[in-house]
Image (spheres, rainbow, N blue to C red):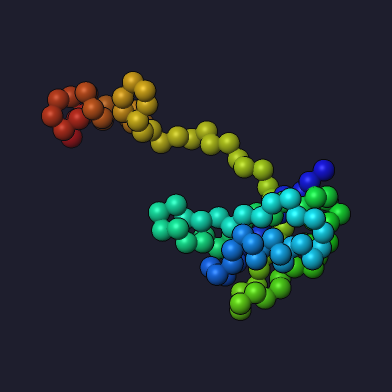
Length: 116
C-alpha cells in the first residue's frame, strides 16, 4: 500500500523531477508533485510525494525531515486527508446568485439589492 507524504517549506526552484529524485534515494516513488499557483505558474512552496510502501515513506521522513535545501529546512510528514468543505460562503449556482443573507442580494429589494 502506498503512502502519501507532505513536503513543505520547499525552495521555489524545486521541480517535480528534482523532488522525485530526492525521494527516490529511499525507495520507489509512485508520484511527486510540486503545487503551483494557477495564476502565476510559480511554486507554492510545498508538494506531495507518494511512496510505494509505508516503510519506504517512513525512511524518507526520517532521512529528509529538517534537511536544508537551498537554505530552507524542509518539512516532511505523512499527508493528512483533505477535509470536506461544509461552510460555503455563497456564490453562483445553477439558479442564480446565492448569498448568505436572505435580505441582501440580487432580486431582493430593487436597485442596490436589499435593504442598503
